[in-house]
Image (cartoon, rainbow, N blue to C red; front, side):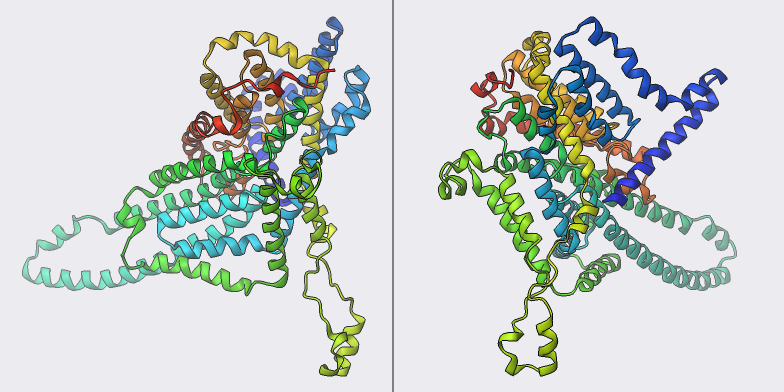
Length: 611
């Protein structure tokens, strides 16, 4: 995961350096120094230029707004690391008298953060034992190797894995598989072309000799026909388009898949945390089961439309050629299928550790769904008195995480109880070994793969939301947005979704959600609509980063393989953003309304966390 993050940072740095060099060539000499000192200028001039705000208006609201604006600028420009910016509330909110140190620090490891950490530990165990690769290859072998089905298979597998593990890790695993399949298809195509050329040249010589004997002018007529190189050139362009489509579908499916579960991507956790922060009496309306019921159908719709768009753009809608129903497999399709089969054989039979990790993973999902389903009493209330008040989704996540550090990776041996049936020397050696071997997951693995910076980023966002509510800034913002009540709610939600989708192309999706969601909550309170009607589409739109390589790590990973150009991603990404906003709008205006009661202004929205 760190490698993927470094890769994304490298792509970002390359683009920034290119822009800087162009600016320095075009800018006058007096501006070149400013361009080189831009990070220093942003870092120190931003708080100085904004300093009149808390001085002229010495209220808690103004002081809170002062810090939020500074952090927003730092997050957008990344003059210092995002996680470092997230630590600023610990220092400056107490100094400015906005919140006490105890209140601020409490936000950095609350219930939502523990849910995020627990989910990530389980995801790391799946990744550590290569269980995700086994699932991916098994599904791809079932779907087959026809172009359309192959793309669909890649997207379905990537989206499913991104629901549970990091979309960066999913992309980093899937792209090499795609690359191996494409390379094998190209090799097979090259071998076929070489044979055809040799056969064609032999036949051409024989035909020319026969025609020259009968008609001397026929040689010129044959030479003026269609050049076979044109056909090969068209085939080469087609292969390039397929390569672009197959690689783009991975990063797009990774971003789409992360929206389906509450722990799939960090912005979803930001929504969960801020709902609990701003509306403490919301009756746990956003939990794993309710989020999955709302977002999973939206993910399916978005995935199908994305697949159709990418197929139309890069493969073509020739169903006979793409699907090949009833047709015999071509050599390229057989080669692609053999690559997948070979990779599956390399994994061997499922191991004891993989089986245990799969069992733990399934158990966690079942515990999440059955804790508080809504239509029946869940296990939290049925097994434990008052469990609905005390047990949240973080409890089963941490329970399964603890088991991963305890359960052995190898099957325990009971040789000491049946020594008579064993070799004496082997029995003596076995008795010296510990009964339980190394666990399924070791802390060193978690420490290396856990994105601790995202945990701090979540905490910084929760601190901002808490300060905004308790200082009165949220109420002030709500009053300023009262005129928006004259605009239809669906139009407001659509415009906000488009705004967030564009903003997240150049800013971290976690930072985008952290900045916008409190504003959307204030806006909803001012026009008396359900806050989730604006916060849900705002959260989902932060994952619609499809246009630029630097927008998200999966995009950067795919771009680094060299099959696509920035313009290819921009062209495909514009339509993908439109598809995403359309699907989100459909979701909140259809099945989302009865699920979350979006037609009414709930009672819990009137009791925000204001002192």
